[in-house]
Image (cartoon, rainbow, N blue to C red):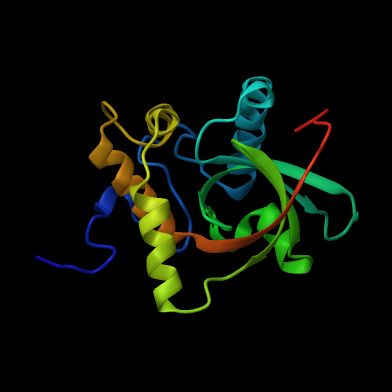
Length: 191
């Protein structure tokens, strides 16, 4: 048996030429970057009313600074906290607008269950940190992950299918580490 980190990723979840394509295909056959961004806006609109009240475990409201506008830009991301770090993965890789904003200015605000923190985002420093990030990000399964799995995978969600999906995202996307700083008080009027 192959013990490589990608061994748990079925072919149906592997990235196609560097692009994430959901197994379920809810975007249809025409999965352009534009259609994925439209779908992401729709999902944010659906999530927003619920997440403002109570954000799920391992989900974060990430606020970056727009690289062109200089204005705050917010989105929801899978964010797994471990001590003074949080691990994120840009599922579409380098194409995510929030990742482009982070590359221009790595200082962010991250609202997690339990508080809002300032932080600085960076790539994993070495293979040991990447391995720790993989373990934290991929193996954590919470109730929200079952609902999330329905949008990405065919069939009934199971813990094994969720872990496979998380591994696919980690290996095909862009993993990041947020060094969490001070806890901040915020008035959440938007995201």
